[in-house]
Image 1 (cartoon, rainbow, N blue to C red):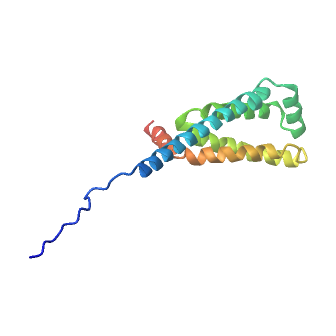
Image 2 (cartoon, rainbow, N blue to C red):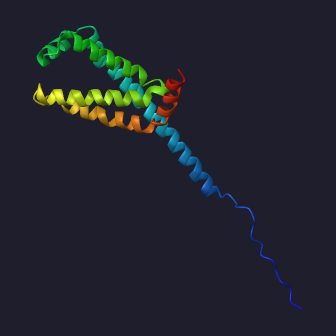
Length: 155
């Protein structure tokens, strides 16, 4: 008589230490990426609020001179300063982050065009450099757009 030996293969998957380590390192990378993106958002909010909006809102002589050269006057200067300040604050509010990044990015496209046409390309790279993190924020935080839409429709 012959005996049949049943296979001793486990019926449930065994989690190895290597797969657990890769899962936890992936989670650590995601956490680090979220922290890095949040840090970029805070830095951009500080830049737009302090370095960009404040000189326009207090009518600093350099801002006044720039807007006079463009030919837009103080009304446009205050309006753009207020938009930049609103965008800076909105970058810090989760439900508004993506929309704020899109709005500030749109302002940067306009700033790029003005730098090229009025100021002969002087400092034209600055708005382009700022567009990169703004586009990243808009893309990564796009999930909040649906939430914002639901909040707006509810009212």
